[in-house]
Length: 158
Image 1 (cartoon, rainbow, N blue to C red):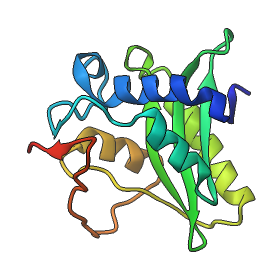
Image 2 (cartoon, one colour):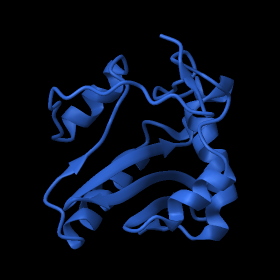
Image 3 (cartoon, one colour):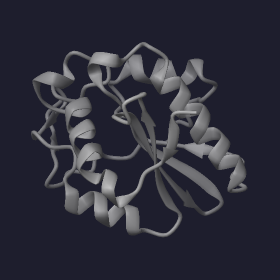
C-alpha cells in the first residue's frame, strides 16, 4: 500500500505539496485550491510542520508513488476520543485519480485503530465542491460554524 506515516525527513516534501495544493497559481490546476479565498502564498512552512509533528496524538499519512515521491497527504490528530482530519492534499496535477480516496480510507482505518469512532474536520464554507466530495464519502455537516483562523499563513479574502 502506498500510504505510510510521514517522518521528519518528509517535511520538505510535505511543505511543498501542501503549498502547491492550497495556494498560488499551481493550486488552481486542482479543484481544492484556497488561492481565491485566502490571501497569502503559503499554507505552511517547515517550522510549522515540525511543530505539528511533535504534538501528541498527531501523524501525517503520505501517499507515495513508485518512485517514493509524496503525491498526497493528510494530517490526523486524536482529540478527546475523536480524530481530527486536516490538510488533506493531493498534487493538483494528480487530482481526480483516486489518491484522495486512498488517503481517506487509510485515515479512517487509522482512526479505527486508535479507537476513534468518528472523524471530524473543518472546511471553508464556500468550498461547495469539496464539501460535496466529503458528503459522498459519508461525512455530513454538523451545522457548527467557526470563524476562519487568520494567521501568518493567510487571511480570508472572501
